[in-house]
Amino acid sequence: MNRIFSGVQPTGNLHLGNYLGAIRNWVDMQNSFKCIFCVVDLHAITIPQKPEELLQATREVTAAYIACGIDPKTSIIFPQSSVSVHSELAWILGCHTPLGWLNRMTQFKEKSGKHADKSSLGLYGYPVLMAADILGYKATHVPVGEDQKQHLELARDIAGAFNRFYGSEYFPLPEPLIQGAATRIMSLRDGTKKMSKSDESDYSRINLTDNAETIELKFRKAKSDALPGITYDPEHRPEAANLINIYAALAGISRDQVVEKFGNNNFSDFKKALAELAILQLSPITAYMRDLLRDTSYIDSVLKDGAEKADAIAARHMREIKEMVGFLTL
Ligand code: AMP
Ligand code: TRP
Image 1 (cartoon, protein in one colour):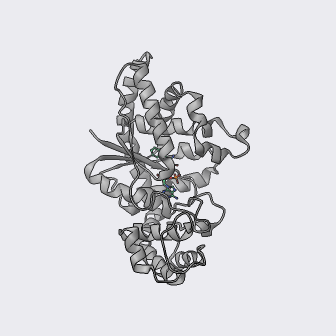
Image 2: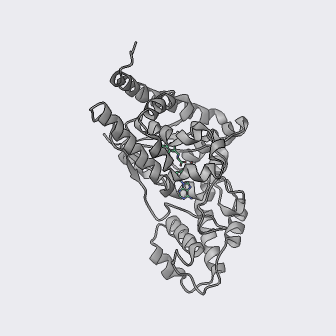
Image 3: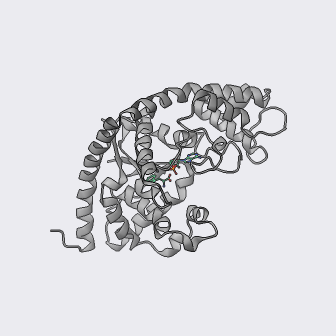
């Protein structure tokens, strides 16, 4: 049976990259797969978080899932920390993960910066926890943005190492699903940096909670270049390429079609059209999110119900895994 698993960290501002690169693509998958969508709060604390902000962000990501079209009746939505299998399985999988594999992870290098010694064991083990998220449900497909590709490859390697060690085909090797024109949305201030929740400049991203004026202003101020017209040349015109990708993804058309439409325009007109399109698509989501967040009891009930369903699947697998490892299951 095919099963989808994916997650978003409840850390700060959900943005257009999260929407176009991940959440939006999940909506249609609900019709053809069993889907599990997690709010990965255990991952969030690999970087220090304020407790009250973490709690708020967990509800915000849940509201975003629902507002973007994830149906809690069809799909499972739950917070990672409410199912203990994630942490438990991460330990077992960690015992099958050579340090050499972890040392290759570029995201750890980026996040730990020049002070790797001061980073936590949690940040270093982040990809092992991610493998446990996926393998705990024996997920077959994982829809993510481009930045998660390396972590997915590691999850496949860990699944393979476990299977080989115990001489079984227990874990399916999860397939990454990296789809669409928006697998890597870049910062609006620097076309060579990915749009990120943690960028200090709020002008670098469109947040899912931004109102129409803010969206318009951010696109107007977005970095561009002095070359004539709009052409797709990611190497020499990264900012233009990013805006073209965003337009293509929002409109559901190809990059070539965007260039055909706006090739002879100047940036100012193109950005205006882009802002209009973004507002048209995002404002119903933003409004729905706001409505949902007004009454946290509904959100919390969705998470509780999802946690019970997720736990039922993962706990069954965990028993089987413990038996394979040689733990006494009482
Ligand atoms: P995160 O914000 O790191 O929890 O990421 C949640 C999901 O959004 C993952 O599937 C990421 O790959 C995706 N994502 C994050 N940033 C971007 C981006 N700038 N462009 C496309 N996808 C992204
Ligand atoms: N690491 C992912 C990110 O930052 C989030 C994540 C955690 C995830 N566990 C996962 C994504 C399992 C897919 C599957 O984007």
